[in-house]
Amino acid sequence: MVSRAYTVAFQGVDARLVEVQCAVSPGLPAFSIVGLPDKAVSEARDRVRTALGSMAIALPSKRITINLSPADLPKEGSHFDLPIALALLASLEIVPADAIEGMVALGELSLDGSLVPVLGALPAAMAAAQEERGLLCPQASGAEAAWVGATQVIGAASLGDVVRHFTGQSPIPAAEPGEVTTPPTDRDLRDVKGQERAKRALEIAAAGRHHVMLVGSPGSGKSMLAARIPGILPPLTAAEALDTSMIQSLCGLLDEGGINRARPFREPHHTASMAAIVGGGRNAKPGEISLAHNGVLFMDEFPEFTRAVLETLRQPLETGEVMIARANAHVKYPCKFMLVAAANPCKCGYLTDPSRACARVPACGEDYMGRISGPLMDRFDLRLEVPPVAFTDLDLPASGDSSAEVASRVAAARQVQAARFGDASGSRQNADAEGALLEEIATPDEDGRALLSRVAERFGLSARGYHRVLRVARTIADLDHSDTVCRPHVAEALSFRVTTAAA
Image (cartoon, rainbow, N blue to C red):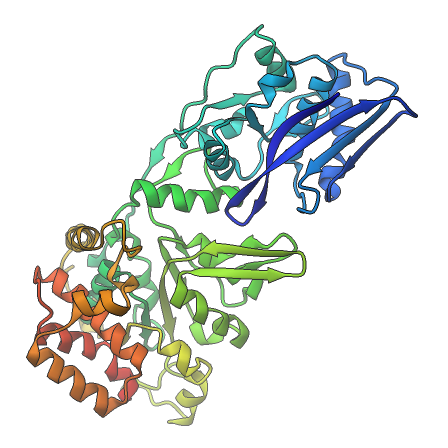
């Protein structure tokens, strides 16, 4: 008789259902696992045998064959231990076969039979819900998986608890979701002295999820400004939190099964590799751009990143997703993030500082900023210079709006966008609008259109640049509570784009 249990194999954030078939047949004693298992899956036979032995369950002196179907799908990870053990227990008639066939199981077994938490419980629960099955997982992973309310999640501490649950001796209660947390931030925009234009640019960028390039001399406050962006962004919606948490689940970043409603803020070092930024490696894991999904990716010292890393950002910035192609895997990850890049104007950093002369003007700046290609620079919606702050300004008291006040305006603008786009368009913020939808929502009035046409011709804006100006102007109009994109909105949007280009 062939018994069956079910688990999942991960392909990016997608979890594909895998049928674990177990056959115990006469022959020389053996325990084999087939179906493209990796090393961790192949070693499951030793963990399963020892775990069953700790429960005083001896394997029969027969040939045990485990088949992981579909056989042409690579199987990776230690989470196959539990479904293999369940299929074997069903073949030995220790647990009812029909009970385990209604569950998707995943979990790593210790040698004493306890269940070790594994990565990917949340996407596995999503797959189980789509298949109209329950989910059986380690107790430590239950709070994470229970956020998918469409399926029953059972979190077991050990294989013995699983046996007692399926035999009716001691049923395990359904797992409860972990806590929703929004950690407070002590970084306020009022801490930044001066830089009112930069603060305004960050407010616009946060309201419409626009990409920002900050250029300024060392110590002018670029990193300080970027660090305060999380304080002005609205919390993740329920759908966004689940979407983001699925990626974090694959990387083991969920804290005790809790869902974090704060938007991700990732700041990789400029020595990071392409696989670390975009994703990849042997198992095609998500990179920083996917971990920043629905949040912010801050890349300080932007020109110092390798040219290959910078150029790989071009396609994800346009499409909001990245395809990682490897010899044994083609994996797609979402990556809709807000890119904030900071750079010095030249190698020495003082090209634009009037009080300190750069020794190699203008070649120093041309060589340094030339590391950023034109097509990549064209993808930044807002570009601005961050001038050094005068010492006299540092002694002044805090001024300007606080992060809470800016955050309320950003949240109001995003609510306008949510009502505008709805769920059918596939757009969430103005930065996502394109084609006919962009023309419908962002076509300026007659004066604004005339100004945009003159500036586009004068400064040679590309078609991409033209459309990005329209998106920014639409966001400025939303912050201004205006239904129509007018000339002042277009003028402000252009001021954040053509100044650096003209320089």
